[in-house]
Length: 165
Length: 206
Figure (cartoon, rainbow over the protein chains, first blue to last red):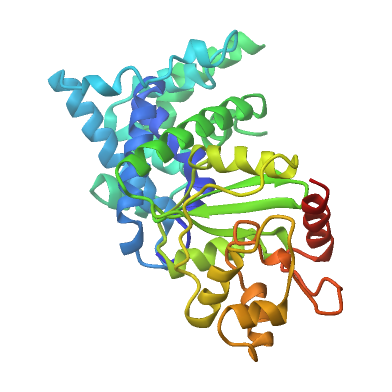
């Protein structure tokens, strides 16, 4: 890619952060976001000029999210990364973290459904591109996303309505 | 009827947009620090407000490589740096903390020269020789295009000196604003004549 990397950061950093939050939850999302953009920066000059940058970044974020989850499962989260992790309560005093309940509802979904909802509905990628990231067919990705949304309508939206009406 | 769930997945609620932007800003600053620590940045940059307009500051690991006035179009300048130097171009405000502090002092009339490493890789040949000469023109002094040509070793290359000034990749830091016409008028300036006038007045007053 001949264009400045910063354009990709400016344009896609917010959506990639929301994707990371949707897939990993708000706390691990920061590390996944940082790893995603560091890795993307490294690879940027070799990316073809006509690449779909958002889809590529979401693909990188998907791999980094898997790494974060694996590190967690092994209990091998690098110690030096912990103090850097912002505490949400400190960063937004008196304000609830955006969409906390939404991400909590997503966390309860099976991981394939959660990924398909995140990459299609949060990142806005077509089902075919979601399938290229998570594996399987576009039809299967569409079904996983639909199943996830159906569950969220029961678990999240009913709660939403009851608290806001 | 709108679909709240789908909308909320696609974008933060308007009330939350600021919190997301704040979190992203903090992460971008952290990214710039980590990327530069790992030597991954070809060109770091930031913009800074000054009395002569918003300046784009850009640097490689070797030093400041470009200063650009708004008239040059900051986006276009970043695109050209991306092609000429490398596309790992990343905003990094801390990289320029010291230079911004020096610029503040300069515009306050308290600083007469900049102590900053320069990367002159964007200038070549005679233009580079001219820039090297311009760096020796003292604060508050001016020199004619003809004198600068003579001092650069090619007394007949007056127009080429004008071109070297007009294409100076590091205005302010390489003081092309101190080069004026033989008739006492200012000549051109890549930052616009009001900027040149302001700089000359500033240096004359201090």
